[in-house]
Image (tube, rainbow, N blue to C red; front, top):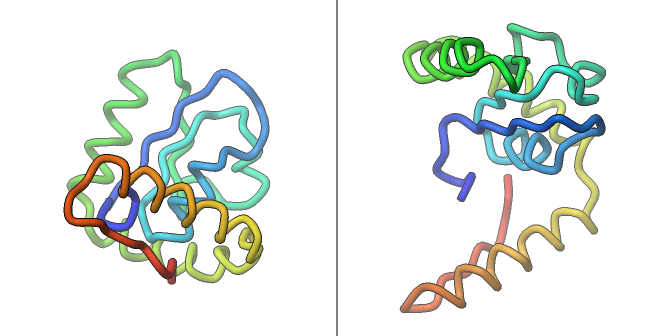
Length: 119
């Protein structure tokens, strides 16, 4: 899922730190997140993430276009987010995410695939 993704889009009207943000940071995908989540407490906008109004289509499309066309920005964010990953990570959360990914992958794919490490 995120292991090969260059960009992660997670929109929500709720507050809190989205699990998809953590997964994006752990796997190196550039996160595009909703304004109002707790993400802004962890990163600086326009450096490691794009914060967008989830109800403003132009804002969302603009952030996606920028992330997909600006490799330098995404690479720089990846370097900063790699350091952040250790702050957001706990072995228990990572183990649960891997177990769920493996469950999903094994239920829909043949031959069986296993994800063993997020690093």
